[in-house]
Length: 179
Image (cartoon, rainbow, N blue to C red):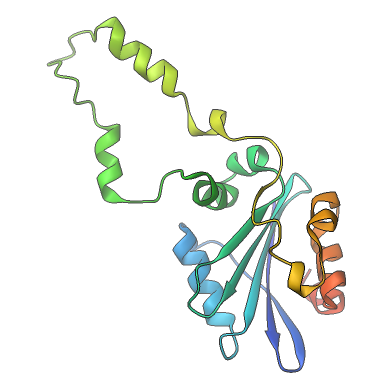
């Protein structure tokens, strides 16, 4: 089960809203969702958590590229929303239609002819993307530094991490209203 929330910084402090990720299929979708919550292009944080297995923070400011931190890339890569974040961080699938050509069988065999052993070796060596994802944190470890949470503090978080982050930002109460 996922928990997702948006924290938007305003002149009056932070505003929180829970968010449905049902329509989110790409990092662009998630970034657009954050930008829609922005007030005057101020900072918006998207928090995503999956049952204490991992958490992720996406930071969007105006039209700048989003900044991302994921607490455990290997755990996140096994989930649909975590995969969106880890793919961006680790250079995975970027939803480019040209990438679909890589999945086609263009080895020159016809009508089910067996492939040669070299082709099998190539497939075996590449493995799945999940096997190549490192365990542990990935991304921008300074993502919240200017908001009051150091890299060391961010890396030390585990259970209830999103509440601790919100507390450091002075937004724990508003986050609790949507939790």
